[in-house]
Length: 231
Image (cartoon, rainbow, N blue to C red):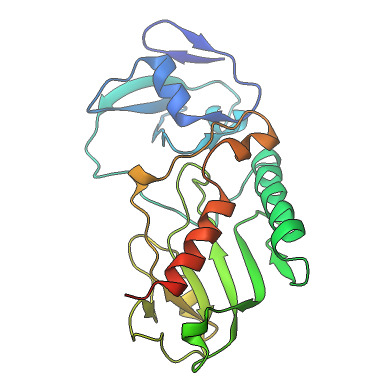
């Protein structure tokens, strides 16, 4: 069990959300939760799910959670991390549902190792794009903090020279987007940034709980809107 400064303890047997650790520890405004143990201090990201082994020291002891002043501007995004089997199952279930109900005649590729991305082949572009391209492969990079933080933009085939209005389609990613795809000659980034305060993530206890909040269905709807609304 992880220990809190206030004397409470928390039994962690599966993935636990950083926000729940904060609540149990009684972390107040302007403070952050820090995991201390084994001579190391690690900030608890309230938007991340932690496996039990991530809350233990190298010698297997549970960390102690204390509060500290928040000196950071925000937790930010990270990409390309290792997900536990539970969170991979949550993401795979969403993609499977999308494939069966939305893309029956389209192939969807997935990062089978860590569910860090999904790629829709030959995604049909709105009519405004037809003089440029009728379809494009479309890549979504899934943040390590998903579903608590949404994807940041998406990626279209780099062979598409421009968007219909000459905006939004860029050779690099911004707003904390994953910049790895644009470092190759394969992808361009389409700016589709969501204010984190507008994203309403589900509380995940079971795999199917992803349906109870914003998820990849909502993000794909936003993508369709962004591609068609070029004003």
